[in-house]
Amino acid sequence: MPVDNPNRWFRHKAQGRMKQDVMDELLDIYQRMECHFGDRGWWPAESAEEVVIGSILVQSVSWKNVERAIENLRRHGLLSLASLHKAPLEVIEPHIKPTLYFRVKARKLVAFANHVHEHHRGDLAHMLHAPLAQLRAELLGIYGIGEETADDIILYAALQPSFVIDAYTKRIFHRLGYVDTEIPYRTLRDWFMEHLTPDTRLYNQYHALLDAVGSHYCSAKSPQCSSCPLQKMCDFAEQLQAPHSMSEATG
Ligand code: SF4
Image 1 (tube, protein in one colour):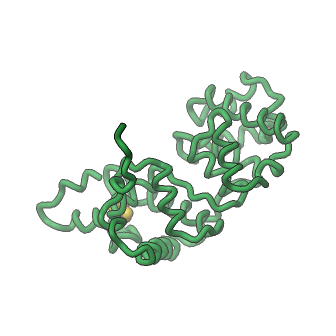
Image 2: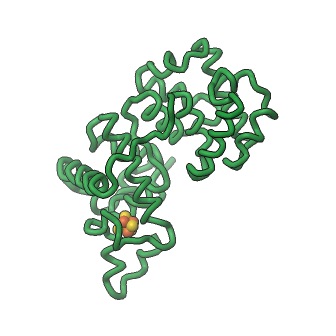
Image 3: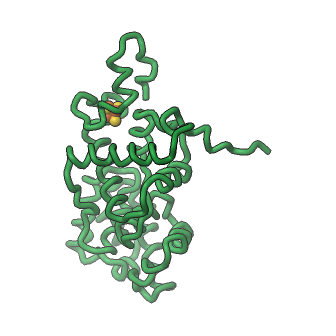
């Protein structure tokens, strides 16, 4: 059976370097983004329950779609785990239609609400109070909760430092010159957490800032490198400027 070599996912900026140098660079990247965008104020929610509901609804869609669904749930008294626990699926589904895959997502919301009801007497705070590793394992055991959603909930609802990876994170760190685009979620999360102090505020803002770079500048097909705060340290941007080197520009 072939043994997976985690190093194969890393590129020149993450290979054979002093750990401290990589740590300093990650903070430099952070500071450049923060100077450019400021405090992102994430997660956009009024309660931990709203974070959980939003983190399930945002799977595979943009936040704009989620805002409409959250508003629908709020208007109809369904923006809580207690109300989702009691509501039939066919009542929930029409309100979350803007988030696509609404039938599956309604089942995920109800599965989460049922889990909290059955294992924590309906008290989400009790569940979120568990140590990080224990909470993560519990979340991953709930229907519809994958690694990104689990880390969203741990970071933004439980306020514990679990670094969140998404497609923007992979694309940006691939283009900067650190990782392969196909790097597994867990490998990249572990790498960030080995090189950044476990600080909830730092992880919160880091993920939010990468989302801002991804959504404003680092699109898959036409990145706006000349406006991006990471341009000066980005392999992809450098190659775009160099003649006869467009092969990497496919990202
Ligand atoms: S400089 Fe361009 S390729 Fe690099 S992170 Fe910014 S937008 Fe993406």
